[in-house]
Length: 600
Image (cartoon, rainbow, N blue to C red; front, side, top):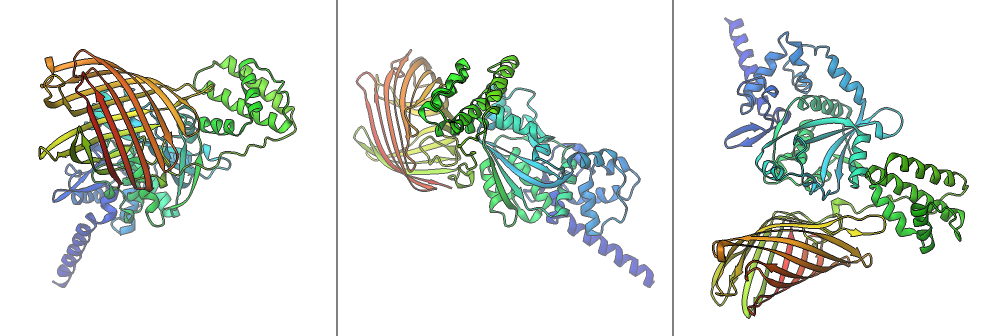
């Protein structure tokens, strides 16, 4: 009788321990479970990630099925779940040895891990999926030599080459794509982000113990066979990386910090704020950044010699000493490399130009005097992504108060430190107003998306400046002076010139369309020609623009003047002064507003 009671007690104890472990931070993290309603749900959607039919929503059932697996003879399936095995072994829930797994062993051998580095790449305005920047992981290698021989682990949407289509935005917002991890050599990562897309890369070395490093590689193998629905604003590349780091060290709790939206820059900040996670960092400037930096250090004569080499292959470089010649030649060689990678010159021209430049350079005994670009503006010191604005102003003599909320991300006149200069990305900016004389509250404007890229052209680089704006706003019909709402789409392109480091001028041609029940014939189309000045003096930013619009309806044909001045007081606080004037067949709109911006 005592033996029976003893065994019953043992079974109950094991059952209680198992039930407790099923909802432990360790087990929930390795299964990518997040709270939902009164229970849990895994962010992984692949059925092959779960051993139980109820595994996606039942951590207990999945634990029970996993324990049963490692008591079975199914070695093939066991090889898919090495991190779960390590977790169960440590918790004393299995005493069975892990089987020999040839593919897993090859994975370890290919990686030869010595550490893990979290990477952040700058925004890339030519790809909608990278407007907010991008995060990925590098598995540092124990091989001798450069970390270019390491591997990068990237989580991304499987878009089948449709990154630039209209469907990308729709499916990216609604979970129409699946996402997953891919592992490839780090030199491929550098070539894509650093050289082809010309994005700066920040590398944050993670402070993993040998045990955590081993667990990370095991879990990377595990999730490498799984996929999840990809959501552009929530379950994106950065969110899944945070869940993966949580699986390695559950006490971090990084993923739970992003219940509403996940912006790559915010996850980098969260990782750096986590105690004991980041132990160091490295800045890797893009090739274009290095060329621009070197060019800025040159004298006028050095610049002349530089273009003589590039345009005419004139290597005379009269009036320069050997140090200056070395700087000119090294910069010219980097630019030729850029041209080839950007497919602006062919292989034959690349070889010819490179050979001539390197031949001339090898004949110089001196080293250049321009130091390497080693410091950039840290993304950790940028303003926060969400912005709230409160202000008051006057519109055609009537006082109003206004509040607005923008979930993401950055405007031209926001504090530019750490952001890609000239890039503006606004999503879901909502503006409410109260007009005093009428005592009326209205939705003044709702911006679904606003993207603008001002990038100065030079003798070396000729990028396109462009803008895309989709919004709903309150407008006045000049014929009836009644107000109503219009849905608007503006797409424009043009060029930007740099008058100095601080002051840029730009011009754009815009195609416009509007739809609304209060419009004549419910719609109109038009074209606009705009010119503006953008100045960034550090704490003070100025933006002024004038646009002449020709449209198929009087309500859309107008001349618009806009000016904005923003003074940054702290990283996350600023004061703004806005002025706007619309001239529309004698029914003008004149508006001035003073506001306070807070970023959080």
